[in-house]
Length: 222
Image 1 (tube, one colour):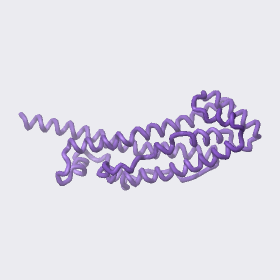
Image 2: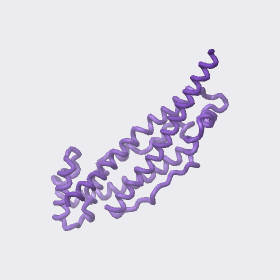
Image 3: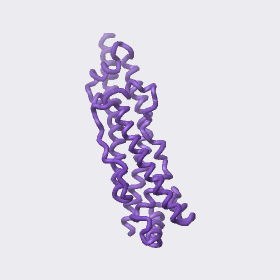
Image 4: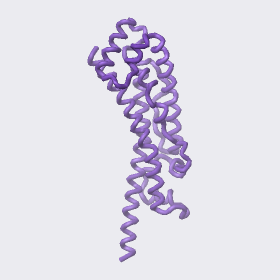
């Protein structure tokens, strides 16, 4: 009877581990997808291509994949900060603040950007460029990069990305090899890593969704 209960508990834990690792896999890929959306925006509206589109490598470690995303996000931030400085120098302070103010509605910003584009006769480039550069430069982009510096999650970060979608038995072997960790500890380790990766990734997505919304609203009001 006891052995059956313990066996059932182990199976539930293995299912929990499988769900957690699959969710972690999803969020690593989500970082790539968000970054590629942002690269497309920069290429289309700022005529900037800081990097080719990124592709997750299932045979590389999670740490290596996240490191590549971080590198490109730094390039994106550099581009946005340079463009932001150009916009700031080329506009009146009051107008710049209206563009940068996060509390303004999308429609209000669209009207400001349209007016700015007309007054500058397009000297700032694409009509969408100023708001994209200003919003990215004034966002939390620098703080939402994949946090791969957490050494206490190193056993998980060293996994090949593709390992996260293996069977629960395989993942259990990887995490609990040589009896170093129990199944409970393995689940806790993956969930802890997920708790560190998920929040900044969701915030990153919010930043890009906001920029995409600006583009849509401005397009509709042109």
